[in-house]
Length: 444
Image 1 (cartoon, one colour):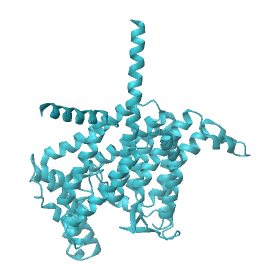
Image 2 (tube, one colour; image 1 turned 45 degrees about the vertical axis):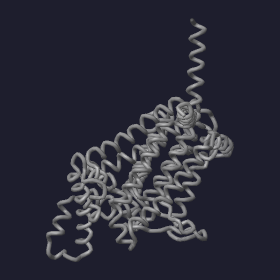
Image 3 (tube, helix red, strand yellow; image 1 turned 30 degrees about the horizontal axis):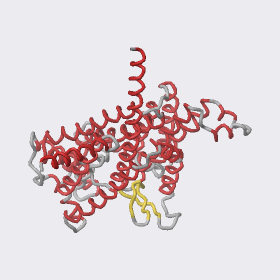
Image 4 (cartoon, helix red, strand yellow; image 1 turned 90 degrees about the vertical axis):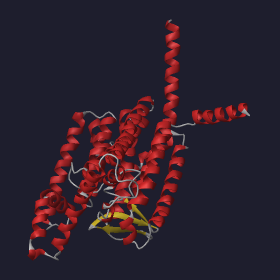
């Protein structure tokens, strides 16, 4: 009996030990999924009222998305070929252009695919009835594309550019600067410019992540200064076009300017003015003040240990508590302990991602892992900073926790790729250690 238990125990731990993929990243994924299910069930009371349903139904819907996300993680994890991801990443910019182009026309041009406007911004595509937040997908595609691009630039792999350089007036494409511009800088500016029409904050955030990715990939600071200046010029040009068109083009710039110029005192003045009561401006000011105020109140009421699971009161006030203000909700119910747990999880992902990237021998895989980790952790800390009122308010979900189908599935793919590459990282590390050991033995 005792021997049987020992064998079963040893078999279990042998299975865990032999399980490919980084175990720390697996634990992070599992923790985030569990936290997501618990917090979404508890935070969606107001959403349930709006949709005339109940929280159990919302939890079932989220469970289906989680199940689909797990399937995507497992599929990506079981793709053992880095070459497959490299080839796919090569077309990341083209796929991003396709998605953003379908969104930019503001009307269906392909049957069963139609753009959707939410809060006066075009950000969603309905594909056979399933809504996709285009920006969530594009930022993942572009990190993968730039990982391929900096790898191809490093190893002289831009074959199309060299062939185009043989055409008259395109000779500049054969130069290193021309290749950098055509394959790296231009895609960043184009994608961020298209995103700018739907969300200024998303364009700035994604642009920053993409610049960090190419820096990680080996581009020098000097090389990045030029596209940075180009991006600023494009932004200034967009502001000019917005003014000339009377706000019809790049209308989200007006929204961003309004957010930066409008303070809480401005909204309070509107609410205190009897003449403004029941006007659209009054309702807008009320909404602008109530949600962030209630989110900050949730943080204050959480204290050290929180109110406890299911005891949140601000979830009935903040309409998007389950998405843009999820971190505030976690603090309200679980206190400072819950807040620190979330920070530790994403900080651990950053540290583990750095190790995995360092272990990999493949340059493309190194850049992809680092870029995807920076994207995930960067968005997480941006979400926390917004909830703590440290930066201007804008919508950013908490990766793998907040309610949002497109975001959850996009980050599921991110984690699946990281886990797939971590399998190869483990082999590369073991091979490196074996070689180092042989060298030490020879020297001894």
